[in-house]
Picture 1 (cartoon, helix red, strand yellow):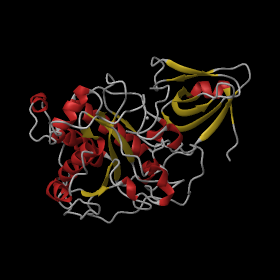
Picture 2 (cartoon, one colour; picture 1 turned 60 degrees about the vertical axis):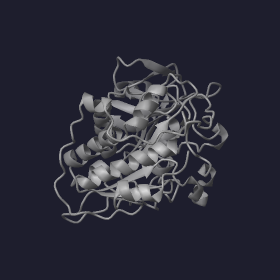
Picture 3 (spheres, one colour; picture 1 turned 45 degrees about the vertical axis):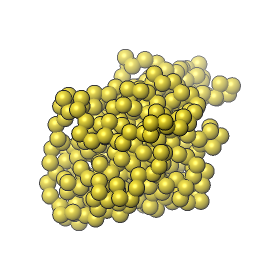
Length: 383
């Protein structure tokens, strides 16, 4: 699980190497490209298959140790030790461009196992070396992340995809056709349930497409509800933060982070731990659909937008909505002198990061109608 919740609503042991080799085939850390071929359509998953798991994660010991206490709506690290989300307006390397792919090259996907081998993180990420994830009911997050990830890798490889199963340490400047980080959520409120996905602060059209297709396929296959409590640490996930860290993806790699469900919710935990094949298939369906429907020649879709900053004019207020829809509800009214950073746009709506002036110093992520930005704010000069 990743991060502390915004207002908007972010072991029993490590799986063995033998399990990786048996389940994941050649997809272990460094992928071995299989022969390229046309991607198949996602496999349909019936309601009946959800009720009858084929293979389950091994049950925990009969007398498991108590679950690690989890602060409310929190990650595995104390707040003071969590990495701050990167500034959405930080400069980027303008020279970064998509890496050309030779004709006939198999698509490459990085599947990162959340919290795997965090003790081996490099010095620039040393503060995360104790980030072991959540746990509940005798299961650890790492256990389920690793199990589902290896099954996912096998499914993708079977469809001609070259897969890298990655630990917490991302290779420097990792470049792929898609990058998916696998996690499970946790909360002290055991009634919280559902899955969520997030992209980086700066969302390229390709990343948004990957996100939307994976969300649709995951919901359709699993029947799980969507949790809209996206966190700052999901959007600012370190593996996305190419402006801050060497061990991160490239600017042009479409990427999402997935929270498969709440390990701390009994129903979600039962589903995730008894039906890992279904979870992996749901994830594979979304990735394969993205690879099939994208335009591999559209390099522009891989470029994240440049952020734009606005300042709310005196005697004005800008409504911040929960979604790019006027009926989604206003979650915050930005007062005068509030800085609004637009880091993504969908039609007439801007996805924004808002930091209100003192004394409230509110931090909000939401959506603003373009007409409101034009009429109620002043655009600040580019830095």
